[in-house]
Image 1: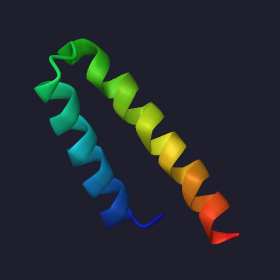
Image 2: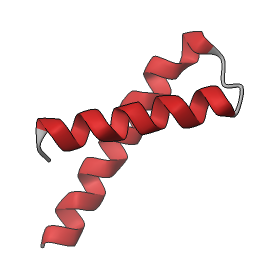
Image 3: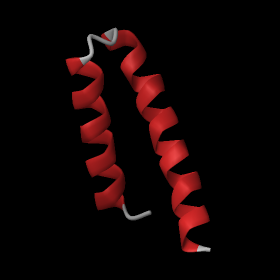
Image 4: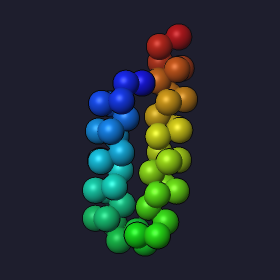
Length: 47
């Protein structure tokens, strides 16, 4: 996954978390989880 793609996914994840009222102190962990899941999916889809 390119840095640009990773950055875009991170921005979208933060926007969604904020819109849903997710606690700010938990957003970093949730965003990291989203990025890990996206990388796993990207590997599966590219295989």
